Length: 376
Image (cartoon, rainbow, N blue to C red; front, side, top):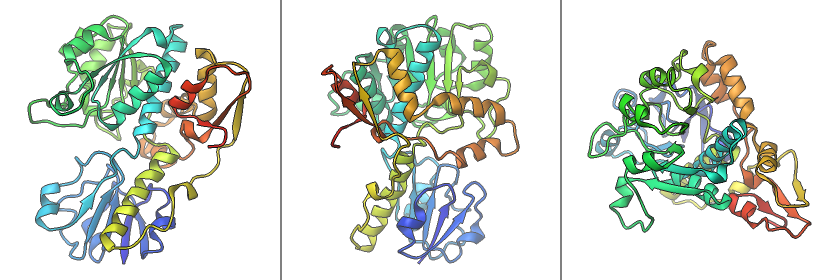
């Protein structure tokens, strides 16, 4: 079996090496002739899997994308060619949720605000949006959800319209797929009109797709709305963000909100399990066997942490300021955006750190936030 995989997917050799020959490629530059005699194709969002790419892939029997979204796959073509395909839904949801939560705490620290005093609006309440809500609920922050598709389903949560959310929320976090058609398209959902309508001192976070916000309009609005605070992990025109916009963004990163060690490993692992199921083979390796230990094993708390102390604790696991600083230094370099993503291998999730409580204080909320307890 010949397996072609994006070079930035972790643990491919460990998981798929036992099934056949693994060939690593630059997913953004993958060409049709590289798939002539390939059985399995493993990609990320940078690879457009369509008729052109698969024009010579006569042996292809499985396509897996280690991402939540599948907008980079031509599903109609794959179905017409009877090529099985799958994604990794929810693989990086925890990572995105924790990124957004940390970013909000960083903004609270910079603006001398208290996150618990804010109302946070979450646009898109699927896997990643729900992960953000779990973090905020654990910390006692009020949230409003907007998701017209889930609102019309059997989801029992309470939803509001986007206009209501914008009118009542101090923080807005975006977690929607990119769509240009249908009853609720998300392409330029936040255009100049909506951006202008944002409340004074709103914090706007985008951790989904760059095109959800009209970046040109955002630059124009931000130039006369210094009260707005921005966290952008995704950008229009990736991997070439608008240079003029970056200085106006408070926290800027190269599409790595979901790039935790755990999240990336889970994405590869889910594809591994899906392929084994298709082949009728048992799963013989557990995800936990792949993950390294964090540099610090355990923190012993003497009291429940304040918001300032909580941010310090979170920085033990992942210091968002490092990626923000690196982005500003390198995004204009040749292939700088992609190289930062490729080399981003250090970030961990809260679960990598065990929290012990020696003072008897109520820290159960830290476990709900995602930290591991002693003995876990």
